[in-house]
Length: 142
Image (cartoon, rainbow, N blue to C red; front, side, top):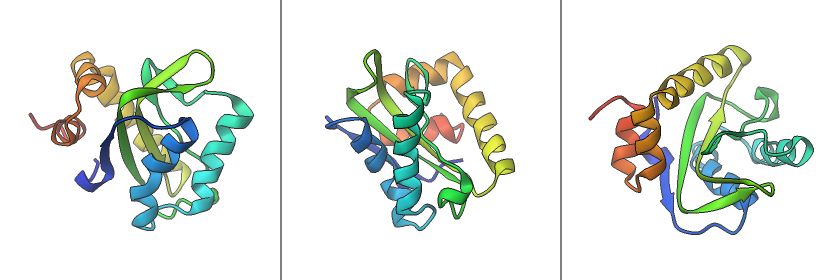
């Protein structure tokens, strides 16, 4: 479900905007998304608030396919120090979602939901600092 090269573990990040930019960088480098897609993810949070924080410690920034998603993929940025989204929401796991069309968007969200709804996976994800372990969680390998 996720390529190894799309997983990053970092220390402190200045703010949520930088977290989105860094989290999306592997997708940008592989021409899966455009710079505009990254800016739209940030603009969505500015306009609508931290709606992308879907659970404690987890945010899923995304934008519309027409904003510059050329292919469908996810990337993950795991932070050792949490970053604030809004006044109250703190996140250590950013899952950048790029979908080339609405059908792929729903399909990928279902896969993300399946992984995160498993308490063991969720707890491993928010507590690990290992790229290999994150990869295994998303690709169902132990």
